[in-house]
Length: 208
Image 1 (cartoon, rainbow, N blue to C red):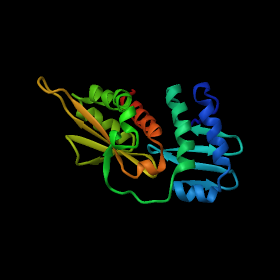
Image 2 (cartoon, rainbow, N blue to C red; image 1 turned 90 degrees about the horizontal axis):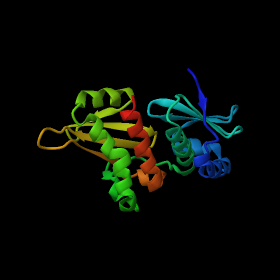
Image 3 (tube, rainbow, N blue to C red; image 1 turned 30 degrees about the vertical axis):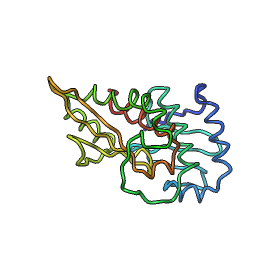
């Protein structure tokens, strides 16, 4: 399997530099436990499951190894998200209470942008193609749930499941979608990061 390194994207560089600095101050054993990831002490490398694939964070090289080549912006966003997840995650169980992005701290401030980059593209792409949505969701390791007309839960990170819900449209009613988070997500990632989470998952869903 090819490995693509992404450690110097200019747009994300300040956040990446800060993320590596903060991560390197932390005890790897505690990070491993809090984030529910694997750590290889010999290689000083974390292995992080992301949408069913393994990402590697190599401490000594300050490099995130991505298993796929994808859009540069998305790879940059994922680099930041991986670092922030490792730094901020906590050892806690899911609350099993789903909330919308608007219900996150300051979620209303960013909601219009979140709707445009994460929710609307799913409705536009799959509103008349539920089979296509199911196919892509399963390819990304999604687990079907009972919400809406068709819905799937994705594990962007071990402690951050994200649920996508789709309602098909017809000649009279437009298609609609929504994205829900377990309420515990706000304990592991900031609201701005969760907007990027939605953008990343949606990109993987709608991209060929």
